[in-house]
Image 1 (cartoon, each protein chain N blue to C red):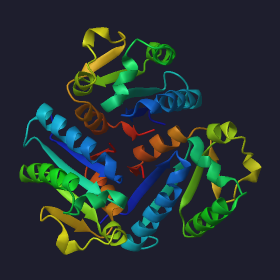
Image 2: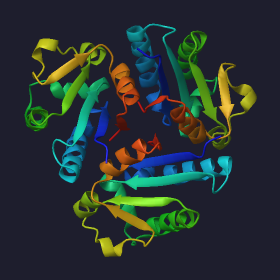
Image 3: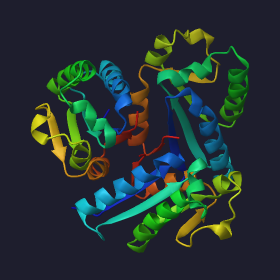
Image 4: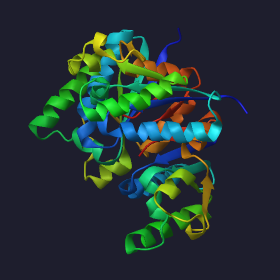
Length: 117
Length: 117
Length: 117
């Protein structure tokens, strides 16, 4: 079977636990290292990258663990600006792109399946 | 025109009527037998497969009718476990997969269009 | 890089501002004229095409501007009927299709990336 490629789209902050769980269940199923996964956050979902607050702290730790095994986390610059989040304040595993929608569209042209949890 | 292939993703219980209506409208448009349709339920959406309750009874009857004309209904095993739903209690037209996300991604690699109602 | 093609799916009225903003941010990123964009509205989202009300007036003006630079707006006939919206009452830039789901699926087979804001 071909290697699976998935792009997760998240634009609402309260969907993060669902995204993390979906990815963990997926990786338990196919095995670490057998898939390419990217998570693109735009809209208010980028607020999770703020390092303040206990909820975000736990969430960022979960993301960090996934980032360490190869999951890409991408934030939309427009969304960061709208939420007044400085690029420098982001966890270092987060990549910033000019527009999240462009990134999601490009990934699909590269054969990534789209998932909106 | 090529035969259309669609995978519907549902992860919230209150979206079931919308999914059923979308499929019925779609089939009225293209004609029964002219498309491949799969519905993948994960997260809390799998609660609809519990056979108790009047709402579920009506919903399962609607799904049953669609299953009889070839629509596949697929449930995520992780979600069933999280909702304490025994595999044996499911309507017989429901197929269980280890992880719903894997199924959705695979269908897209097989040329299925993704729809999130 | 290949020209990007995107189909936006909207089925909830309160997601319109998000859709408009996503498209504007996307176009600022890739440049007008460098992408094909279609917005397919089904379900209650078609209520935004009613020309009454101040909110809709502003929204329709924003859509009109996007339509003028080539964005296609498509409404599902089933949804219009369900919302008692006459085809003749629609803004002239809106195209009506028999079923929104069919349109979204076809666009994906034509290489359009799916986005659900």
